[in-house]
Length: 304
Image 1 (spheres, rainbow, N blue to C red):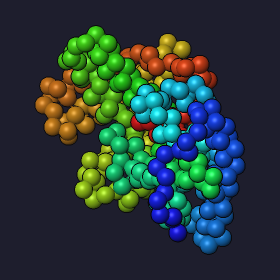
Image 2: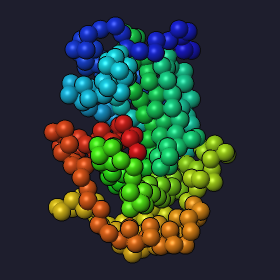
Image 3: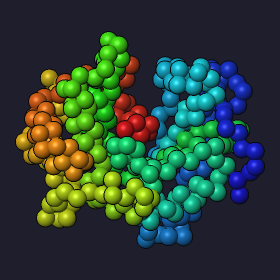
Image 4: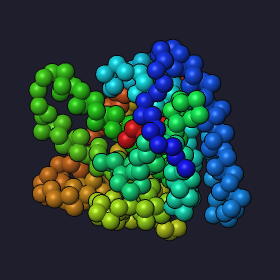
């Protein structure tokens, strides 16, 4: 059973010592999760088939430094220096792992399967207190949600770029920027909701938010929604660094705008905006990381 008085911050170490402790703690976090996985596979071999646990890369000194402003410079608040994830397929697997994780000493649990992010992203994020006091992160993610992570991460990065531009110029959004941000968010919601539909994880939603995050669009001949949406969503981050969107997704955006209460004129405008290429200014090599590292970080941080 979890102990009382569980620490909510990392041990009182220097920044560099905390990073060293994270490296030493990674095998312990890995073993903790692998033990959980083995117990569940022994007890529920059919249900747990296909589930895996994988460690993510240790957060680098540079990446950790960039997070300090989020915590008023207190490096003890950074709790994902060492991290890993369960990759699941079904809601039953998610629930079993969640129950096991609840028996650990946790400094926090955020269940986005019950209440998703504003763009519909879903995962389970736990902060696990290890025997040496170090706090590591274990996420429980679902394969269909991971499938769209790169696309939705790029969409929301572009929305944030528009926000940062307006802030840097000390002005409100222009009508065009408001519309474009709404389009980007709508596309991310559609992708996440379609992924959740295919993964059959809507059963985990809190009843109070179900209507907002239920996919109601078309499905293919295999009953899957995500293939339809992805077929309508053009390539992300081509050599010209544009998000190319075709007429099909524009129509879907217009329909979604109407469903959200927009006027027909606003819905038509949103559809028209969707057809315009949107520059991807959030380089995949931001902060000197490789494209693979950026995608991995997006998966691990669940930043949508």
